[in-house]
Image (tube, rainbow, N blue to C red; front, side, top):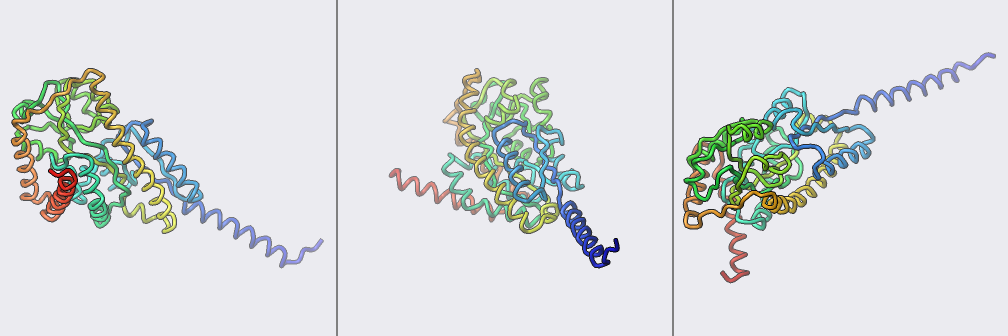
Length: 345
């Protein structure tokens, strides 16, 4: 039977439109590769994976995120190099590895600046956005910063004073000149290693000291190679998920908003969880036989003096701006004044 040409044409048009729609949806879907040195199975990784699934659902498959855990893509600096050449799109990394993009993000990592978590919270409420914006202006999109924790000196021989510290073979992250400078200011000759080689370094005696949050020491199994922990929170460590701005901007504006909302929520929860977990992890270190060493209180002025000198050196050589340091000191003075008024001290 003869079929009117307009019917054939209508069916053809519908088929073409449907095919075009499917092709368009496929073309806009993209898998973003994100790497981290953290082992799989940790609490924060489970939250991250749940967030990734939610992003996939809310964007109807347009944004897929594949996570490479456990250092399979290399340490933080290797991850950043792979991001620059397009092999990866982002990483969950320690803030210190990003100093080439925005040096002032190390403002929280300066030695012996924070006395407690209350001071950390007060300062971060006022300076986190400055760090996030600084990274964005230099090509990196980051989400809510999250606490890794106060880092403690863990060693194979007891360290109570700066003089004791000068006798250790201390690890610093390979490719992190700022950490090396800080250690050198204490009279220590640092030994740079990729994070994936630290365990072997401890086992072979190449290094005998690490400065690390308790939770990280347990997760990376470094605690099995040390005997002492000095009860002095030397530095505050934080991390973030950072994405190359070009990769992030390849998403639609709507999908970017979804990704930001979901991941900011994930990392806010991780931020809170890590604080509790680090308190528990410190206790776990002691129950597993690591001996707690109290610093010599009569020598605390030496610790503080060396720390302040290291900070001034960073400003002097241009590794840190005076503006960020002044802000930090302003907020620390404010929170300490508030506490003093409340306690009557």
